[in-house]
Structure formats: C-alpha cells, structure tokens
Length: 333
Image: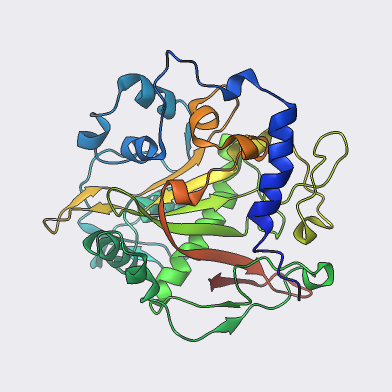
C-alpha cells in the first residue's frame, strides 16, 4: 500500500503556495491598526472568565464573532451534583447514584460540559503532567488493531490514517465518548450551517492535543477533508485520497474546523476552572480566524493546524469499515 498520509500536508503546501502567489486577497492581510490574534487567544476566550478578561477587548470581540457553538457556552465552573446519564449512549457524568432526567438535547449538552469520569481523569492527567503528550499515550491499550479497507480506499491506494494500525484507550468509556463527539458534530452541525457526513472524504478524524500554556485537553476536528477536484471551483490535486470524492467545494469550507475542549482542571487544587466546549470555528474571509490563525498557503481550504493550539498526542479516527452496511470503528493512531 502506498502511504498517502505522510506527504499530504506537503502536497497541500505546494498546491496552495502556488495559489497564494497567484491570488493576493486583501482580506488575508491584517490591517496594521488591528492587533493580531493567536491560537492562545482563542483558547483563552474559551477558558475561565478570569483568563478571558485579560485579553485585548478588540481581539476578544473579533474571536467571539467567529464562534458557532454546537453546545451552548457556559462560563460558570460548577460541576453538577446530580448524575446525568444518556440512555442512548450509556455515558454518565456526575454522581451516578442520583440520576437527573434530562431531554436528549440536555443530555448531550451535559456530556460536553461535564464528560464521564474517565474523560475527566484524562483531562486532569493532561494538566497535571504539564502538557506531556506521553501522559495520554500511556493510557492507550498496547494492542494494535489493523486498519481495514475504508470505503474502498485501498483501491485508490489511499491510507487515511497516520499508520496502518490503530489502538483504543484502555478505558472503554473514553472510546465511546470520542465516538459520541463525531455523531454530535454530525447531528448538530446543520444548526450552524455545517452539513457533514461521516465519510472518508468529509469528517473522519480529529487531532487530540494538549494546549501549549495550560495543558488543557482538546481535539481539533477537520471536516471537508477531501473536496472533489473541479477545474473551475477547486483545481487542486490532493493525492490518492481525493479520488472518487463527490464533496463539492463551497462556503461550508469556512466551517471545517471544529474544536472540542475538555473541562479545565486547576493545577493546584481538585477544583475545575471551566466546563467543556464544542464549537465550530468560522473561518470566513472577513473574520479574524481566517486573517490571523490560518496560514496563507492553506487559506483556500481554511485549515487551522493542531500544532498551533498545542502538542499533538494522537489522532482520533472514526472510520466506516463496513462492506455492505455502515460499521463505524475508532482507531487511535
């Protein structure tokens, strides 16, 4: 099998460096009068109010204007005392000896704000380790799982994952939770104008990182991964994995970066400083995310890189490996 994963970023770099040289977009240049936003500023806006209040108010306001929340944003840090369980997912947060009945919408909100205990333990481990990716990698089951053919990708000589083998987290609840995130993005995306499908051309992966300053655990999901080649609309060759794509390039590319942040624990006490977040980052050309957070050579595909947010620990892939019926499985690489 030809490994098309490794040179993918390089391929994008070459293709879009040419595009950047050919088209000088006025919106890609930051006006000198405006302060430049950073990935750290984005994380601060989504963090504790004490941190967010320290930002330049202009930067803060511009970032907030580009946030489309899939789950309502909560600035308070109080963890629910009552347990909250989803009968659909089997996931529970809070104290499970007293379960509060919630609607489906409220269940899902609660699981983002305060995930199951095993996910909270992972979030605290990330911070307590000082942002060491090894602390997360050591929670993986050592058993290697071969990645099978995904929607006939082998026919196209396409390898979607970083390696031909994946793993699971030892805590099965963590695996279930990350699968839940993919489905929640798919189901709630249309509410903010993001229509995605869980296919090898669209939403199938995210990059789990530990934030540079705080160690906060997060996943940057990338949807709209392989738009169809089109001489007029998208004249870019993205390698073997683009073959067969029927996903049109349109304005929905602005919404391809989706960010999940785990609750932020204190590094000096058992307290929690901020609840979890699930938000679409709107990279429309007039906004600060497009202007300041997306490199020039990938502005056409609106890619925010996980390395700018922190240190990447693993990739989380959710792939349809079924032959006749959909069969989605998690592969952590």
